Image (tube, rainbow, N blue to C red; front, side, top):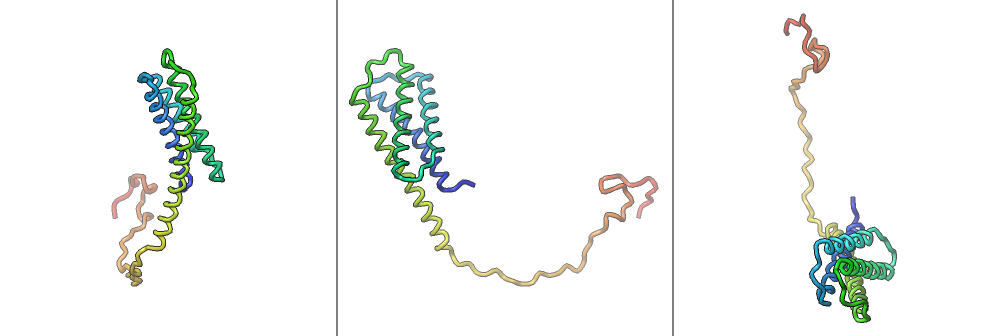
Length: 178
């Protein structure tokens, strides 16, 4: 049985993988990059999904450490995605510029904080819903405690009255009936 914290980790990993892939693709398109082929797109999605899955397995105790892990994971996902898109594109027209690195870093920080906030709010909402379910439970009527009636005629026959070799065997040849 999974706990709300485990489900929140899965949500965090999925969001990190999806946001890394979408942000990398959008940044590539905004920078004037060509549409990626199927190989580049597959490499991008597998790389970002791997980063998301690894992020879902990480557990950190403090919120600041969790935010740092999210920012680092989003940065790694964007780097892997950017590498996949530039590796498969024949000639990449531009190198790493300061503006591009700053834009990727700002996006990673903003998304990392938003994903961390979303995870925290999911856990708070789940806790509140559990408490509300306990507190606001409708008062049902008490069940009727009438005694059960005993059966007067029991029609069970003993298996041992049959002359077979067991419950699944055919009767003996000499069995003449009842």
